[in-house]
Image (tube, rainbow over all chains, first blue to last red):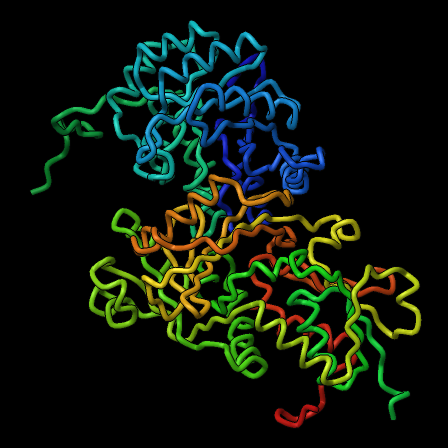
Length: 260
Length: 331
């Protein structure tokens, strides 16, 4: 897939939070063959008083993997906070890419779509390439594209919930409505079958973190997710059959020999 | 025979340094300790003091279980106020799924319903429907435990001296063991800092008898009784070596956890807030590494009190050889 002019070799994007250890995180990222990893600036401790970034050794572990980095504004609740975090992230990670999160509600971590559109406009004008974490709302999606976003990342379900695709109908509509925009299901994936389902719908990629990081064996789950994403994409490209109500025998019955 | 005793310099007087010095001195080595005078520079000064190998294993590694069980006995033998009261894990109703996940990943617990929780901690009666009780776990007051170790070392004639160790200080020693934690990061390129923040509360309105953990999807938050109505609440885990004071966000999270455990914590007096840097290697497990003439023991991460005894014993094997004395015979 291509996003902001960059060809990505894989359709899986993986988060770097919540792993039992950085060593397991690194193994899981390698096993996932993810094209992109998201990193949260807060955890990186970029605001250290020594000016060098107190989280640089953790960041060094991520950088050594040679995977493209997508910094995020996780945990930001206001436009101002998100814009400030994005600017700090650009400085620390040296990329114009930013996964924009503006959280509007604490129990569901639902995006504040009004703040999201405003922050996306500001950041695009500042030269950022914005990956907005949004809902499946088509009007909001249109506004984000108007604001300059070239990719949309609707949620599957609330962050960390592992519930899969809560609203497949709306996700299908979104895919149909924006056939040429790169769409990434971000958040809510719990199982490989959820990731495969998103890909079968024609989504361009899947972004997940908790499902891998908090699995009993994160490396094995990373491998499972990679295969599911690949399987789902292959199935989409293979043009699946339509479901039907009645059986359609796969071998002809008329003229079959009758043994009595 | 004093001339034949190996002379060993231990750098650092956090939990790793003092436990290592104690283990070496008990095996007959002539030990000196050099350290920074200010206890607030040490990560162990802000530790929870939970000896909770089975709770910790759920989110870290099963490799903690063996050395952790060993640590409980070691501390009970060296610090009489080590409390073997177990630890209790509870979850808010919305996080009960997390409790199942936790239980699948560990051992040595029994599942508690509301009546069991009330029997263990009467003040938590009616507040939680389900929990896990780890009966074999223990806890201690880290500052008191370290003071006791230091006193014990001095009684054995171990010189404990304040100051920064220079190369010249290494002269005359057969071995130098560097236990400085994150301060040794310049010599250990793969050592990183993981910031932790804690609070000390005084709350006569609540009586808890053992560490209580509140399951949380992101960080394990816990309240550890310290006696005299005091409780330690901890601890955040932030991938950063930032040494600044506790942030408002972290303070809110920790106080929220205490308040969720019992609303009476809302009336608690905040005696202290603290932050420091846990030293960690990429797999979050400690290691012993020889660099030139210095043996590094570092990377205790969250588990200084839990892993120091086992790793100090391994350090002693490296510098003194296998321990050939019979159990109970040690000096």
